[in-house]
Image (cartoon, rainbow, N blue to C red):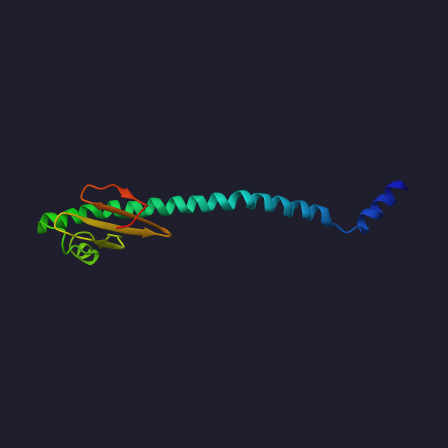
Length: 128
């Protein structure tokens, strides 16, 4: 008798999640998002910084080859470097090209890197 009552009740009960269970899941998802989003944004920022620096670093051999061929940095442009030395140059611009120096600049995302050459360091601060 008791067993048949229990079986009858179980057959007629509807399954599903209670409101409390759904709220707990939402809270857990919210906590995970609060941890993951800032971490992702920090990763994205570091990746953009690294990519901008790498683009400047990769263009230096082409700039130096231009200097070797011409004896000056005057006239060095991104277009000329791509056409004659390295089609993969990813610089934004070459500014202040003079007989003895240049400033190469590359951007990635919201980060911009530059190098004042021929012997400067690649930096993210300041500008050409």
